[in-house]
Image 1 (cartoon, rainbow, N blue to C red):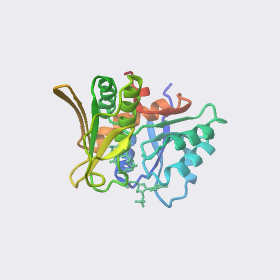
Image 2 (cartoon, rainbow, N blue to C red; image 1 turned 120 degrees about the horizontal axis):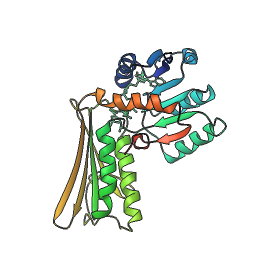
Image 3 (cartoon, protein in one colour; image 1 turned 90 degrees about the vertical axis):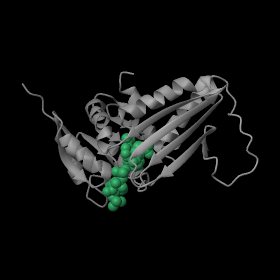
Length: 249
Ligand SMILES: NC(=O)C1=CN([C@@H]2O[C@H](COP(=O)(O)OP(=O)(O)OC[C@H]3O[C@@H](n4cnc5c(N)ncnc54)[C@H](OP(=O)(O)O)[C@@H]3O)[C@@H](O)[C@H]2O)C=CC1
Ligand SMILES: O=C(O)C1=N[C@H](C(=O)O)C[C@H](O)C1
């Protein structure tokens, strides 16, 4: 007997990522698109879905998630902008729904997930770490969700190793020249037409540097992770943050 396909809704379906997700889900065995919605659309067609993928906007994603949880829909979320406060709100929303799963991943590309993991491993061995993230100029948020997540992972590893903030002799400079500090890690954002999504994590120590770089050259790079998320979230109750928790890393 063949299993029935997982019914998938897509929010942000007319956007850059949403369109790519609709194509990927339509082409994936065992999955089907039952609703492809965007800003201003009535969400009622989502009642046909089991899992909803959200690539929308940081300003709207919390309302979307509230709707999805209230309507017992599993969610796979690529939209950025998740603070600890937002994650706590989401955990409270999920508390009365013990079988419901929400997966939030700041980056669904395999290489980006590996780069973050390698960076966390390297962090305790170097005095200093800085991040440069480079994206297309249509991006709404800065720094990127990936860079923020990477900085937090590096910060946690540095803290566990008892490291002080990296030495920096800057005593004068223009605002922003040393980037935005996340967990004492400076993060620098570049926006250029022609780019897709890129991240460089730089470490400096005694007489050496280490650079870890990942490049998404096309939005299809995110699709294997999104499809894995859709397939796994139905049997992964609660809130999962980061694709590294789903991959066998
Ligand atoms: N986790 C990951 O791997 C990745 C995450 N992203 C993130 O995904 C998000 C979307 O990126 P991208 O596709 O480039 O952006 P786009 O602006 O191209 O697409 C977003 C779409 O969502 C629509 N939208 C906005 N608000 C809502 C809402 N509340 N409900 C439903 N639809 C809405 C927008 O409509 P309108 O234009 O009319 O506002 C637009 O069509 C960003 O946060 C980005 O950082 C991107 C790539 C990979
Ligand atoms: O807006 C994008 O394009 C991307 N957003 C995510 C982020 O902010 O990290 C993931 C990827 O970098 C592409």
